Each structure stands twice: as C-alpha cells, then as structure tokens.
Amino acid sequence: MPFSQRDTASIFYVVEGTGPAILLLHGWACDSLDWQYQIPFLHSLGYQTIAFDARGHGASSVPPEDEPDQLRAEVIADDAVALLTYLGVASAVLLSHSAGALVASIIAARSAAVVRANIMIDPEHYREHDGRGGFIAALEADAPRYGGAGAGAVVRGD
View 1 (tube, helix red, strand yellow):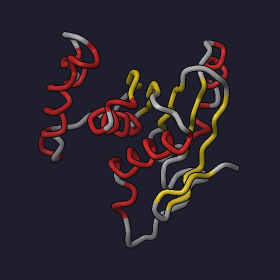
View 2 (cartoon, rainbow, N blue to C red; view 1 turned 135 degrees about the horizontal axis):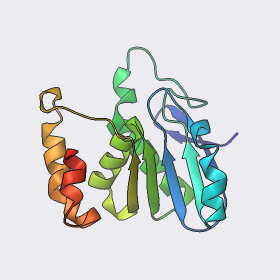
View 3 (cartoon, rainbow, N blue to C red; view 1 turned 90 degrees about the vertical axis):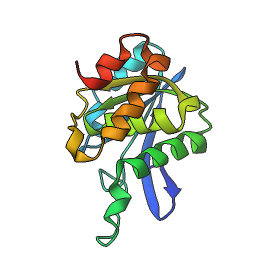
View 4 (cartoon, one colour; view 1 turned 45 degrees about the vertical axis):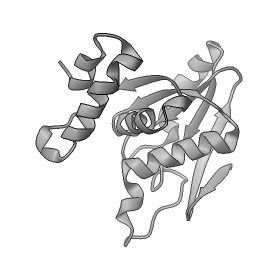
C-alpha cells in the first residue's frame, strides 16, 4: 500500500489512470473507498484519479489523542497539497464530498495555483456564529475568480 509521510503522519493514497489529475477528498468519518464507484467513470473520461485517506481515516495514521488539532481541515488541506507535490502533480481538479469540501475550499484559498477546478458535492453548511464567518467572507470575495458572477451565491448557499 502506498503512503506518503508528512510530519508524523503516514498518509495512504492510490493513484490510478492517466490524464489530467482529479484529487478526491472524502468526507468526515469516510475514506478513499467512498470513491470506488466514481473512479472508473472518471477514468473513462480520461482523468487520472488521486484518492487519499485523511489523517485519522481509513489506512492513514491516527494522530495521538493529545493532538486533536492534527485532524483540523487546515492540516488535511496541507497534507493534500503536500501529496500533490510528492507525486509531482502541478495542478488538479478538486472533487470533494461533505467535509472534504471544506478541505477543498481551504486548498483553493491557500494554494490556488494547484487548483484547476473545485467541485464540491453536498458541502457542509456553516452558520455565522460557528466562527467561520471570516472564512466564508474570504470565499465570497474570491468566488468570481473560480465561478463567475453567480459563484458568490453558491458559496453563501442562496
């Protein structure tokens, strides 16, 4: 089984197919196997798929109990970008589900050069009082760059 190392984490990943890369980002309490039915279809369209298990999920290592911050979306986003670098992939389409969409959004905000497109399926919903208001505002400000005039409405959930 292939693993990449980042900090103290062992990150399990699977790369299959050829062509432009699609990075698959699973949701919370899921793993890369969640994409098993979509992967053959993506290959039939000529894409290479990169699926990985986020820290604490699937075959990837579990952080120590006294380091819960290792499960933060920001850390997982950094793991994903590091994996792309490790694999020599300059840019990829991000295809995410649920909590994986938060990870994808962080990647798009922090490392825009690696993002060819950002496709989010059933993203998590956030309220202003949960501390993410500033993050949502930053996404709204950046939305026209990724999706045109209507993208802000998608970020807000209008």
